[in-house]
Length: 293
Image (cartoon, rainbow, N blue to C red; front, side):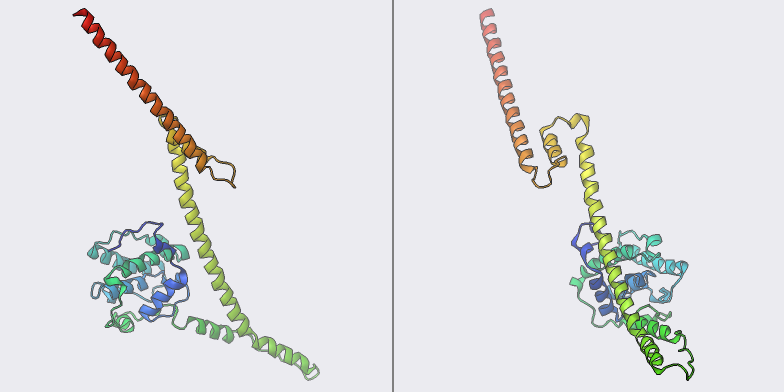
C-alpha cells in the first residue's frame, strides 16, 4: 500500500477538478469545492468503500459543522489508520480549518492510496447512499443541491419590486423587471468566477510550494558547500560555479564541468608525481641498503 508518498510524487499534481470528480463519481455526491470535505466524513467513506467493514460508519457525522464535531470524524479515521497500519500523519488542526490547499493535499494522497488497493477498481456491490443512511447520522454533505438551494435563497431574500404610482412611465417598470430577472444570471456568473478564482488560488499555492521546495534544496546545498572542510574540493568548486552563476541566458554547467575535469586532471598528475617520488625513494633506500651490506 502506498502510505508514504513524497511531496514531489505525481499524486500531488492531480488537479482539484479531477479529485472532486473522483469523489462525486464514487460516492454519488455533487461536491463543487474542496473545502466541503473538511469535516472528514467523505474521507471516512472513501476508506469504507476501499476497505468494507473497517470503518464504523455509524460514528461518522456527515452533518458536522463545528470543529469539535469534525474532530470526532478524524478520530474515527485515525482508528482506521491504526487498524490498517497506515503511517500517514493526520494534521487535524489544519484540515478542520477548511483551507483548500491542506485538504487538497490530503485528498491527493487519499486518491493515490485508494487507487493502490486492488488497482483502484471500484467495488460494484458498494452502495454509498445506503451506507450513509445506514450509518445512523444522515448525510448533509454540502454539494447534493447546494448551488440550486443557494440560488433559491438569493431569490427568496430579494426585496420586492418597489410600488410605483400610475404617474411614472411604464418604461421604468420594464427596466426594473429586467434588472430583477437578470439577478439569477448575475448570481450564476459570480459563482462561476468565484470557482475560477479558487482554482487559480490553489494553482498558485501549489506552484509556490513547489518553488519553496526546490529553493530549500538549493539552500541546503549552498550551506553544505560553505563548510570549511569541503570548500576546496573540486566538486564543491564546480557546484558553486552553478549556484552563483549570474548570467541567466547561459548555463554554467559546461564551465563547471571543465573546471572539475581540469581539477581532477591536475590531481591525477599530482598523484602520479607522488607515486614516482615514492618509487624513487624506495629505489634509493634499496641501493643504500646494498652499499651498507
